[in-house]
Image (cartoon, rainbow over all chains, first blue to last red; front, side):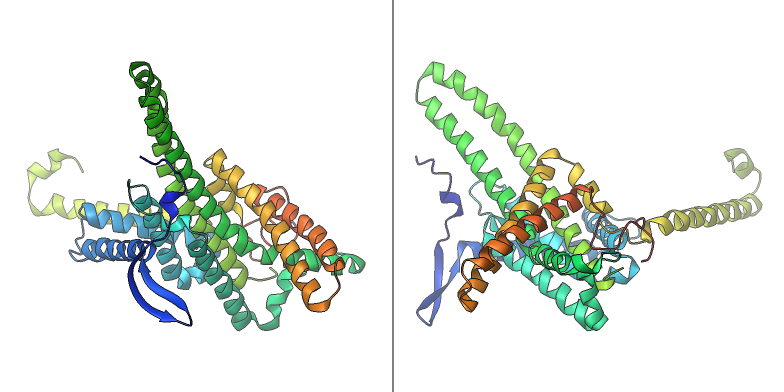
Length: 250
Length: 129
């Protein structure tokens, strides 16, 4: 029984597909779980909206609650204008939420524990913000980097700092989600390893193993909170960044 | 309308019942509209604060990642500029320092110490700037 806490993040090729330029393109366990996430989100939302009942059933309530939740988030941080980005934010939120929650099932794979996944999501948001900002506001979008009421001799330094601060957004946006999932899963695995090690010491070990076991139960509850909270934080930061594209410079 | 009036007749009380109900619905709708009116305004970074104060663990993670992101991006851009322009080591030094400043600015913004959102001075959230 190995208790290597990093092994759960290993990518394995399940089905080799093709070789492009010396790189093997394969259907990996990561791809499999992304497929599972997309299918389960779609199944939930399609299945929930088929009845179209005035008084929603259980499934329909879930869909309605998640819609309302994300819609309120988008509206409160970007105003009604930002609602055109609702489908995007909703997709991101549901994908991240399902990735986090499905990752908590034992023996499953945590897609959001891979930096490349969260980085691509954050970069998508970043490029949409930049692209939409320039498309909508033209060069006025650059006023984002020029605060009002700054003395002219401080302006070059301030603009450089603002640009760096803007460029660091996708980094912190992606690393936060990734680090939370990685740290949480490693912690769980390490404490689970303690149980196995202590159980090897006989009766006294069994008594000792109860301690990390209780802790792991509490940690699992915390991880569920973190899974939801990080999906929410990811969505709300997306909204805040989109708000800058819609109303730059204020 | 109470149950007592319903027993008296069929159509009359039911009619007033409906009228009362629709009046109540209208009042509720107006109230909701008023309440929503406040919420609809874009509030910038305020929600960010609310989201993170939900758990100190998440808050700590958020602030540290903001600082690290600023420093890493500053150092990375400085290093790349040095490689392209051959200005080593000045690009790295200057941009690393600027990266630190940007990181601290990020942290202060997400902690709500500095004016939230991107520049805009001290006008209160919810006001169209």
